[in-house]
Image 1: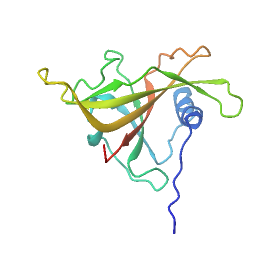
Image 2 (image 1 turned 180 degrees about the horizontal axis):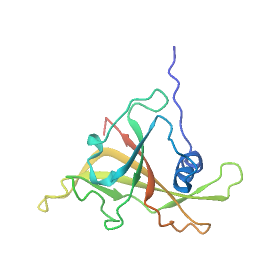
Image 3 (image 1 turned 45 degrees about the horizontal axis):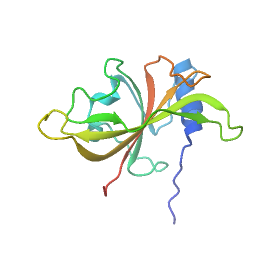
Length: 157
């Protein structure tokens, strides 16, 4: 029997999970989202985060609802060996039906290693993050500590 996997759209990530949680409308998350609001998602190595297996998601993909520390915006990961660095600027998320801005943005981040060794450049890892945040109607990020992260490990990089 073939495996059935689901790809959650960017719009669903913002409108279905992140916005209801920030607005207080959602009291519980789906089973495949790890609620990690007690600590900053960026301050731990990605392989040390809880990685629950769920048949809906791809086997090397995990979703975390966490908080951000506004002190370290460019190079996240102050308490660990690696660092989550932004790969490109923030992109606005548009509605799949109407094409209008839905009030969310996504940024790609890449986990580098050897952050604390200043004598050598940081090494590429095989960990990649899509960071979802809320934004206003102009695309500017809303100052909320909530962030929804989809972390993926590519085993063959």
